[in-house]
Image (cartoon, rainbow, N blue to C red):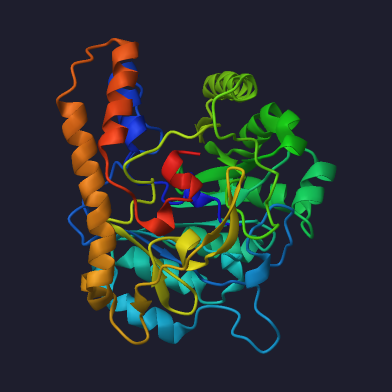
Amino acid sequence: MHDTKQAGHDYFSTMSWLQRLHTFFTGEPDALRDDNQSNSHRKWRLWQVEPTRDCNLRCLMCPWHGLRPKPGEVRYMREATWRRLAPYLPEVQSIDFTGSGEPLLNPHLFDWLTEAGNHGCQTGFLTNGLLLDGGAIRRLLDGDLDWIGFSVDAAEQELYERIRRGSDFGTVCSAIRSFCQLRSGDRPLVMINFVIMDLNLDQLEGIIRLARSLGVDQVNFKQCDVIRAEYGRSLGLFAETKSRQTAKLQKKLGKLRRMAKKLGIRTTAFSFYPDQQPVCDQDPRGSLFIRSDGITAPCINLAYGGPSTFFNEQVDLPDTHFGDVMIAAPEAIWSAESCRSFRRCFDQRVTQYEANLANADFGHDLVKFNEALDKAVRSMGEAPPSCRFCHYLYGV
């Protein structure tokens, strides 16, 4: 399952708008701010390149079960597709090699990571870790990897293997520990992505302590908010409005994050209730998702539409595609009106939002601050139709 995003997908992206305002109020820096600005002039902030739709697990909450290749279908991105992308690597700041499948199933992954790194791109990917043996670890560490995320949703074997069906808790923990011990200093950044659900809510403290024992730098707490058909439905703990329950969960997670900080573990987390943003953290104004077959889209959610659930409402997410890199070059796709108009919509929302906040006089008054935020949100135009039913735009 793609959790990046989550955590957003690009872990080295700029702070979200609410995070920036939070930093203004509290002085707390964002844990994953990009310290390397040497490539910030490049055309694209982020490419999310999907190595494969295939996976070696069948996780309980994964929304992408319906995408798995059928017998006879191509199982991963071909070298020919990557070669269409490679000439543009000097124009990309960061590449996240994560999609709907397990990246390590693509035999070209190591070479592509190295090639992207040689062109100055920051690189990383999310993995279930099951295939990360000694040889794979060495190849990654010999390359130019900036970050790696491991999907671990429980600190105990029985529950972990019930959620990550087909995996082996001991094997994955051993791989993470070996990776952390063999790396040089604190690079690559090593993270655990934890999808919060009712069945693993009592594992929150345990996952922090497990991360510390394995040598992990950061834990990203992810909502189960990507839903396709019945996959992932009813597993999320977030709600459409603030309530006693969401407040309790938010408080519990806040307390846990403070504990993690004392233990030297950084954390990130999404909200338990919606708070609309001018643009999601993926920020399609500077990013592009490239499917394993070469089709481009604003993000993975719009690359693969279909029946979904938006809070409690049944919706049908439309596919939003910009073009095929096997037909048109990425630069031509980026310059086409369909892509430009999509980005322009968010440019306008951000401009309106920033203008309203710039004119607001809230000082350090929290009530006035929240009133200014509400007014800024109301001032924005509509998001593109395909984004209006995506939890990411609402900070969940």
